[in-house]
Image (cartoon, rainbow, N blue to C red; front, side):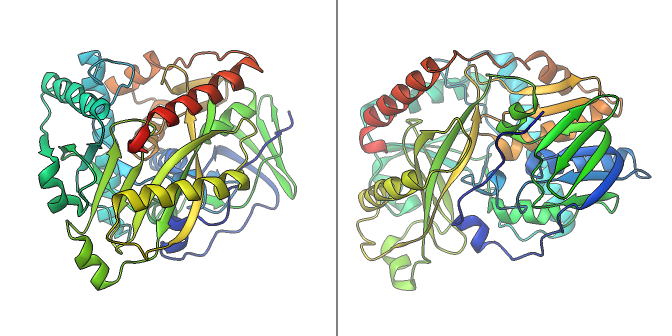
Length: 438
């Protein structure tokens, strides 16, 4: 089977360029035979390889990525390691209380794993238990916050409702009318975290970077071919998110969406004083089509908004050029006290969404496994599903494993051209009605 698309992200990811530099591992060359291969060195693949290495300390685990670690999807998100469930299909954003409580356990286990690794290895990634603000500008957004508050009451989770008059003391800006603060989210520099996780893998994990797979052959063993060699493996774990569907499984179940972000230059001391508020925070929008905003450890401001549907799974320079103007407008509305602050970086990042918001977890074929489609929760969910998948393969079962297996059923999508027409219409209308939240 030919692999018709491989990751080719755009060059100016701010997280990647401001993270500590590292030496990339060499690309794979020649022929290798191994028992285990993990494809994709993002949060899911790194966790799966690490856990497999712990279960099989005398066996080599081969970990392959098409690009440099920290440059791809896992290093391009907004850096929120979120604990709380957020079911946008439910009226109160919590939905079934049993599912919500299990989801909370999953997310917090992912947080615990990451926090432990950062502490153990001293990874310089600014991981902080800062909580998150979910903020609203318009009445519709405030109604969303009220619904979510009711859901959190049902779940028994703490929160703080912050009125608009108090928000400048938190965020520096008077733009928002209300926010719901929840304390359990950890904020992180995502590319720095991924780089650090890769550089602290166990010694029996061999990482190959910049090795895009161009062909796969399934048989008694799995053969992965690339331009300079091939890897023959007894077992394959697909941990390459939306690109997993390119390998012959789960056809027409994933929507490759792209989100766009910009990161400013560092604020001067005078600009920091003019802004005020706390020195490190993160805001997610009440409206899902609104802007995610962060103030980082090095006093930059991140703006993330605007979607595109890219079925070919390739970045689009025309979208970057168009959406950076929206980022400037969003920044100016929120931070009129910073008129001279420019963006240093603008980039896109992929989201692997499914129509029913369910991921895939489990066995795909007799010698192929997968943990795919994180639906925007890659930091925590990717970490925990990669870990639990390796446990399952090694014969260890957990109540969370059974939950993941029982909810592993992404919907089949409509055929083209109906799919693209429907998705693009939904994106157009969603971003239009977001109004000042964008």
